[in-house]
Length: 579
Image (tube, rainbow, N blue to C red; front, side, top):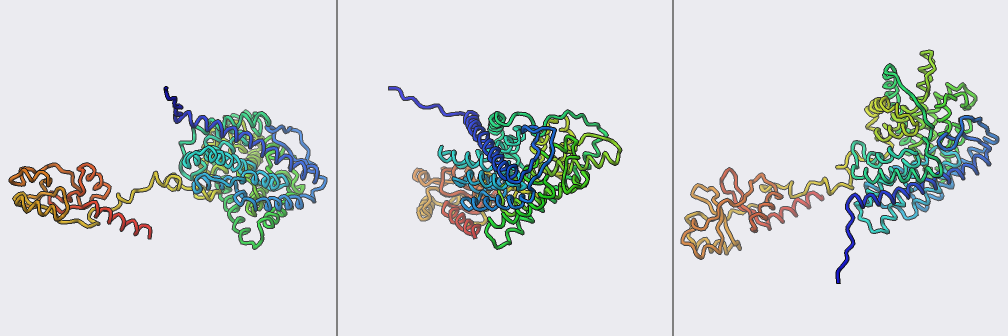
């Protein structure tokens, strides 16, 4: 009877299937995040506070909008309540607090890709209450965490290796963000770029392309496939290049401000001796108060950004100030509100606020240029380039964020100036990052420790361990040589000439048939030098199939090192390294 064996999947078949699975998870979880936020927002902000917020075109919004706020005084109450509920929920999974993207990066580098079993559910609910009640945060951080957490849990059920589980988490990270931003190309690149400050996890790009595409197609069934901010056709002039470079410089400075503010408020709130739920409520209350005066900063805020890009800055309502003054203030206020929300322990993402802050900085820059030049150029190019340059620098992911901004704005024509501005901004702010868990390169990641570690044997030199001075001369009598080899417990022994030069070796088994040693000398035997390392000595042992290896310097015999001496030396240096 013939035995039928299942054919092993090739590398590409395996990761294509994994990419498909992760893509389905990313698409469905993005829908869950999107609608959970909408439901909570409808209950608290729309029905409770009577606040109408603009919706971006790509999510079903309209170019016609009029802001209303029937009970704005309830906003601080609701924002504090939502943050408090979020803090209570996070008690069931502490990893669900704060910045979801950073927690996902941390899981990749330091936790073998593992997540709490129910962390994804806690993150979903906590983020819905934080953002849906007015907290200034993004939905992409929670989605990255949820998508990665679910993918990791399924990997555990399927008994997938820790190494592959890490890669799956990276794929889910990018696919989740790319899906909910409706920017699948950027999502595929984010999987590889966002883990490091100056490197790529290149192995995940192939499955990420599949996962991001599948996630986007599933999510688009519910939300639509158009870019979030609509489609803009824009042709830039080469004469505008200097202004784009200047915008890159400004965005670099704002990227540093954003990172420092986020880290600063995290530090401030960590010093408060109060439960997480109370700290989060304090942050929510402060954001709600700011939101009463400047409703543009609450929640995700993409609708307001879309209005500005459509040259409807006159729709801005902050404190009844002039639209220009509001636009200048908004980047600072959005940084403050986001720092309060996430820094206090609220659950949400820093990605969407960073994109919006960049868009606000770019838009304000464009308005100022129009005023100075007397022109009326569209704000779209400055907004899109601002998004790419500022958050690309703050996240240490200039390539993928640049692509994301282009996809969100539907303006492929802006890719060349966005590249210039992103490079300039990154050069200014590359030492700063929103993500504590990012490492500089693959070599610095615990996930690649084995791949890049230097074996201890290669760091120990032969001259640093005990070398035995055991040998016979060419003219040593056979009987004397046999006795010496037996007393040393050696099956062979090095042979030297009258000048102390290493000639070769002679085996004990060969001496029974010899009259003089020179008849049985085996020449060309592998040897090592005093400056050689133990890894090279071990290779010489394997080649000669012996228990010892000769040590020779400039042709002169120095001695031998045996397996015992090598093991003793390894143990000694290993203990020193651990100490």
